[in-house]
Structures are given as C-alpha cells and as structure tokens.
Length: 270
Image (tube, rainbow, N blue to C red; front, side):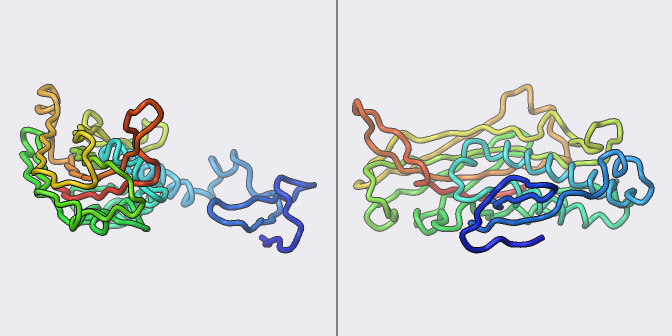
C-alpha cells in the first residue's frame, strides 16, 4: 500500500492498481489488486481460522445493530459514526468468553453492562457540556418500563446554547439489546438469544421549549406494549438513553430541528 501525495489525486483503478480515499481523510491510498479468491477463503483449509473470526465479526455487527435499535432516534444526534465503535465493542466483549472455541464464542452484554454505561454520542459537545443538569432514572425491568425525570432547567445557567438557537427539546428512550450466540444454521452463524426483543425501543419527546426561559421539571415514561412483557429474559439488557436537540423557525413559522445541533448519552444500562 502506498500513499499518493502531490497533485496526483486520482481515484479508481488502473491496470491492477486501485486508488481510494478513506472516510475522513484527504489522502489517496494506492494498492495493488489480488489476493485469495472468495471461494478459496470460504473452503480452503488454510483460511479456517479466518472464517472463525469472520463468523464472530458478523455477530459483532449484529450486536451493533441491536444497540443502534435500542437507542432509537437518538442515534441521529451523534456527531461521529457510532456503528463501527459498537462493532469494535462487540469484538472486545466476545473475547471475554474464554470457554467457547473461537468462532463460537458468546457475546454477552448482560455480563459486562458497564461497557455501554455513560456512553456519549458526541465528541465535540457531549451532553453534560450542553445541558448542565442530569435527569434521574427509575427502571422496572419486569414491566419493561422506565421513568426519566429532567429537573427544573434555568436556561441562563443550565443550557449552553452555542449556536444561539431559539428552541430546544428533550428526548428519552428505553431500548433492549439481546446477547448473541453461535448458531450455524444462520447465514451469519450468529443470532440473538432473544430475537423478539433485539434492538427495540420506545422514545418520548418534549414539546419545543424556549432557550430563554425557566423550564419546569419534565417527566418521561417509556413502556413497551404489554405483549412484549412475557418475552423478557435474562439474556436481555435494558438501555436508557437521553438527549436534546436545538430547533429553529422554518419557512411558514414551524419549528424544525437543526442538524448537528444535538447531543445524547446512554444514561443507564441494566
């Protein structure tokens, strides 16, 4: 692999050489084509260990999708790509299974819930730096219910309105993530232990609030429909996340959210 510098900024391929720019970089990478064929990787004995790691990676990808589903619409408030971070987290979790053979190890978030606790969706402006009061959380696991209470907010001292926008709103979400296990009959070789509750969420949102006001205490109650309650098992992790986003007046007088002017955080994992 080589890095192309100077005025030569081609992308694509020329006679067996590929040029591409990685996401988030202005560099152009050059590499030659080739390597083992897909069939050889799928069947060759020398690639058996690679296939085991590929199977586990597929489980990690599904785990990341489950977390994404569990945080609901708060996912859109992130200022960086969360999916590869959660996939990498899944890889770390799967390595903690020291009993099962490689390629069949379990991914158990229920055993290592602290991995997701206090996870911030933002690197530039984390939630605690924008909203200087944190909500309290109460969870009834058996009822699949969570209550989030935002305390009274004095926007002059508790809200950092760095873009000087006129409105904001608060969001709370309750979601579920299932542990993953090896299941060779699946196309990816991994499946959720409890697929009925993998990556589901319930969200609640406040009305648009003025960024120049004193806001009364806000209470959000999130609860899954009754038919989900009998499905709860020890293989499920509950995830409570909160966030906020700013809004502005659009054409016609309606209030709309401003892109990249929000933040979120996983507040409790149990």
